[in-house]
Length: 345
Image (cartoon, rainbow, N blue to C red; front, side):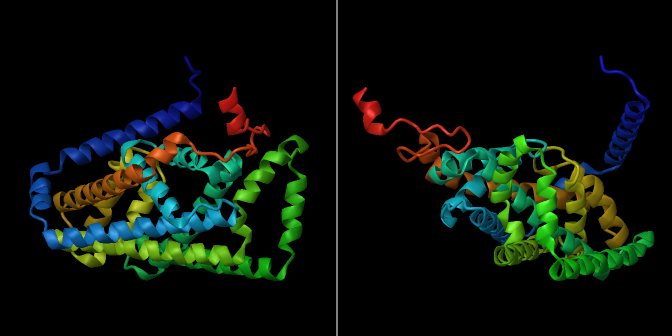
């Protein structure tokens, strides 16, 4: 049994309080009304939402491909998008973001991924996640500055403006200063036995130091966010809800995604989304819940459909795990035996 420290007791009490509050809130919802609102959604707008969701996630896959390419993992963009959709399908089925762990494994099965090695692939994924977080943070700051926030949340504009100005000052300082010296100093602080591994990770995350690739990735990420907000607006229109609530809904979903939870973010998303829509736009709890159900259903249908097609296309090659003869695995530094030698044996 683990030791009951004060910190663990407080964390357990906070979690229990959150669960009780969430359970009480769910008990007040009219689930029948939510299901009725969802089933009476406008089919044309649901189709538009599905198309925009597919566009958004495809642009995210393009962003990942740009980040991987900057790190030296030269997988064709079409194959990269197929691998991305397989990952998205797994994220809709696995909890706590475990689907993202599959991303490294399926890239490792590709011959170019096998040549790059696990550490470089992981570095490329870290670069992609860092770029995605930066673009998302920028979008969130812009939304806080522009959106009409309810109640005391309106006071968040001034801290957001301070953060924007601070980031701009840091960017100017990095441009005028010697950022390379800082990176070099940081690399010297890494223990010598870990420098090989960190060097591979750094090579994979080279997009963070490549201005051209970083700009291209940021453009793809920004377009993905625009398509995602359009997807939410289309769902709101399908449910006869105000489409201007889409940016706030996007911000609420991003905040809810910080806490890992059920597959696709179901549950944690509604905890943040329902009160946000109610306070800012007067959306009833049942209609907000129907909106959350529509988000989950659209993401599930699109991800599983596109993921199944990608798996049918790339699955045989991934299972075979193709690798060029005499190719050296950078993680093991052992050259596989040539095919001709294995056949002769």
